[in-house]
Length: 238
Image (tube, rainbow, N blue to C red; front, side):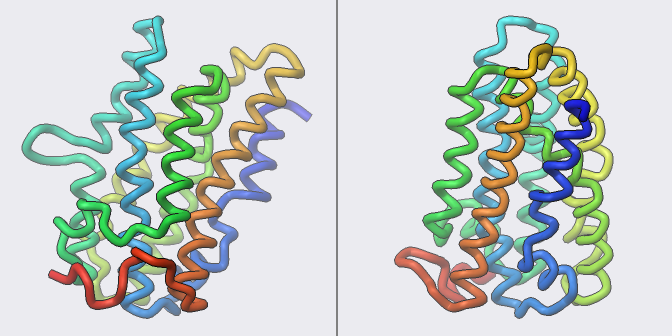
């Protein structure tokens, strides 16, 4: 099996589109507070992405890699006054009734969510560049989940519209561009069986990061096992 086939098989088996929370969310079965909990906790991951990309770029001596990679930070952070995925995510927070400043503060994030997202930043900062790049390849599978999410949210939830879902719509064009570079880089540089295994292990790690966040969300807001410091329904409302 080729390395690309191995990577795609990992996504088919382990990507978080298979998690029951996403089926519940996209099927219109989440309560308003479960949606809010998802928005709050997903913010931790969104906010970690430009930090992990900055950590990655700080390690790259090749300016060509830095030139290709820096658009990822711009996509999420945006310009000084407008734009960017983080601001678009806060539009979603506002649409579901949350105070965007509360969400951006990081208050109420589940402990497991915090540890998972920070583990991702540390992984990209500390592991070999091959693994750091390979861990980003979950973007191979992102457009499908964004398409399903847009369709499901528009169908089932009153808050869903072009503005509130603008983050996901923008990622439909951004993610394929990013992953095209990252996939080629990994395929070019994983030139031994050992390096192929390293790339696959990195992608498995990243799918675990995503899956762990949803496990924590399910435990807290579906099963009702709220840990200390977690967001309580009614807090942080607009």
